[in-house]
Every structure is written in C-alpha cells, then in structure tokens.
Amino acid sequence: MSTLQAPHLVIGSGPAGLAAVQTLLKADAEVLWLDNQVQPGGQIWRGGPAAQDAHARRVAADLPQLLTHPRLRFLPGHMAVGTTADGEILAQDLAGGRLRQLRGDKTLLALGARELHVPVPGWDLPGVTGAGGLQALVKGGWPVQGQRVMLAGSGPLLLATAKTLQAAGAELGGIVELRPWQDLTLFASRLNLAQWQQAIALRWQLRRVPYRIGVQVLRVLGRSRVEGVRLSDGLREWDEPCEALGLGFGLIPNSELAAMLSCATGDDGRILVDNTLHSSQPGIYAAGECTGIGGMRKAWIEGQLAARSMLGLEIPGTLARAHRQALAFSHRLAQHFGPTPAQWARCTPEVRVCRCEGVRLRELQGHPSWREAKLQTRCGMGACQGRICGPISQRLLGWPEAHPQRGVRFPLHPLPIGSLLDER
Image 1: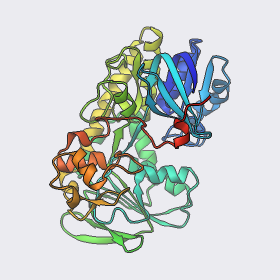
Image 2 (image 1 turned 30 degrees about the vertical axis):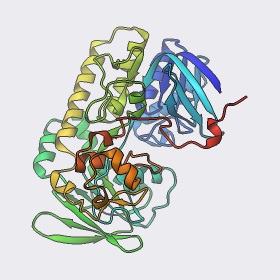
Image 3 (image 1 turned 90 degrees about the vertical axis):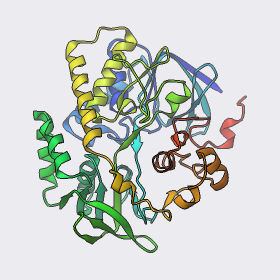
Image 4 (image 1 turned 180 degrees about the vertical axis):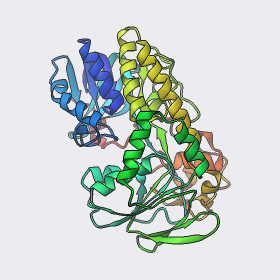
C-alpha cells in the first residue's frame, strides 16, 4: 500500500475544499488534495464549475493554474473509505481499485452533504429519485429532454434542480413546496439584497413553471414505474402526471469519516467545530455542508477560514462577519424548510424504508434496536450502507444508533476484495 504525506491534507473538492486549497496555495503551503470525482466542483459544481454561476466561472478560470501549482498534488477519482489506527486516511483509487494511505500534519474535512429522504407510498418506483440526485444525473448527461418532470418536497434545492432540468429541456409540470406561506415569508424577510436578487432572478427564469406552496405529497402513482404523484393542500387531493419525480426534503451532513476519526458530531450529524473550524480532534478541521447545511456561500467562506486557521493566520474581521451571517442563514434554512410531522406520517407500515434490501416499515417495527433489525431484516446492509434508511429509521423508530454517524466501521463505501489484499 503506497503512502503519501503532506503538511496539509484536504478531502473534498466542492466550494469549501476549493476555497481552502486556493488559500493554502496562495500562502505557498504544500497540499495533498483528493476527491472522488474526476474534476473539482463537488456536487454543487458537478462536472466542473465553468457552466454554473458567475462566481463559479471565476473559479473555473483559475482552476488550470491551481491544478498545475508545483506545491499541489491532486488525486481525482479517489474516495476516502476509512482510517488507520494512527488516524491516517485510507483512500481507494476508483480507477485501479488500489488503496492509498494518506497522511497530513493538518487535515481539512470538506465532505459535503447528501439528501434526506422521507418515504411515501410508491417512492421506490423506478423514475423516483431525490431532487438533488436527479440534478446530479442531469448534470452527468442523463437525458430528460421532453420528459414531464415533477419536483416536490421542501427547500431551495427544488428551485436549483428545476433550473438544471429546464436548461436540459425537461417539461416541468410543477414545483411543490411542503412548507406554508408563513415559513417562506419569514425566510424571505431576512434575506439580504444579494440573496433577494438571486432569488428573484431564479424565480423569473422559472416563471412559467407552476409553484405550489403548502402542498403535501401523499403517494407516488404507477405500476412498473412512476406515472404521477398524488398531492394535497389540506382541502383537496389531486393527481399530477409525470414521467420522473424528484423528491427533496433537505440535506444531511456527510460526517462518517469524521466520526471514524473520533471527531464530535451533533445530533443532526454535523461535525462540531469552533470559531476557527477546528474539530474536537487535534489537527483536524472541517468546512462546508459537513459542519451544517448552509449553501455554497457558507462553504466558500468556511474553506477560506479553515485554511487560514490551518496556517496559523489571523482571521480578518470581514471574513468573521461574513461567517456569522452565513451561519445565521443556515439556521433560518433549518427553521423554515424541511419535512413536517404530517409528511413523515405518510410513511405507512407497507412503505419500503430500505430500498436497497426491500425492507418495509412493518418488518422493522417491534425490533428493539437498529442492530437487531439489521440482523433480522438486512435493513441498512445494502449498497448505501444505511445512509438512506438509517436517518429514516432514526426518525420513525427512535433508534439513535441507526444514524450512519454512529458506530461507523471500515470500509465507509463498498470495496472490491482485491483492494484489501496486501500489495507487494
């Protein structure tokens, strides 16, 4: 097993990782950087930032010079899958399958986030994905031109996904926001001028797409695949036809690697950090969505802040103020968006909680713990390794250990057996 070492190790190439690496290299620091994608950008700038917003285009213009910097070693297509007893990172080369051992005097975890799924009857039909998953598929070339697509759930991700779908030629049947007008009004009342301009520009671009507020998803319709979705505004129910459905109820921090490194995490899964983005473990920092969901701006600010902390540099007052504002925005996102108890209640006993292994809620009810349920039903033992059904089970059945951040073990992602053999 080959070993690579550098004074600064950055894991993740989304906005937080990019901002950190940019800041570190400007200070002429030596950096080892890895990401599971072949291009920097993370999920928000999947496939590279060039075709995204103005800020992303500026980042894209700097990327060639960044990636050829003599003090940088970038490992694209490498996924962090575990740690050693000494706290080093084990990364799999996704092209060759081999494991590499990575060591940094200081390490930044810019791990991003994944979607929170809320089951409803029929959500396991082909053609139903997470809203963010659908956006990622389309950015990767998934054909949706001419298809009728519905988006439902809660949060700004629905609008961002709609923009991507519209640009790809999809026929958007509507965007359905679960939360009532009061939540959206309170959220909008605290936006600054730049956020207002961004929101107005996005809504204008989607002006021909029906946008319904205070509407709940009752069930997904279809036999062999999705054919429509049944909705309710509390007064009436109706069906909307569609060929694809994106359900999005928010995001969950990716913090399994941090938990494996014994970093403290919160009940919501975020990595707990101080004002300098330092975690509970010496030499380990975290930035971006893995410290709390707050969007691209928060991630970019935290990447810069964490890098300066790693370098032992003073934090400028403007950066500290911008961070406080980003944290306030993050708090408002959590307060005014996300699933409601009524939406969770749509998960009836016949609903499949674990899509990987086809386990229904009724099969899990009555088991005293997540471990017992896994032994008896294989829930959480599929390809996602409990990343989808774990948070669902925690919410519906009250099993705290069901959350993937609890009791994590090597490997964090499925590995070919050949990669575990000792290389000689």
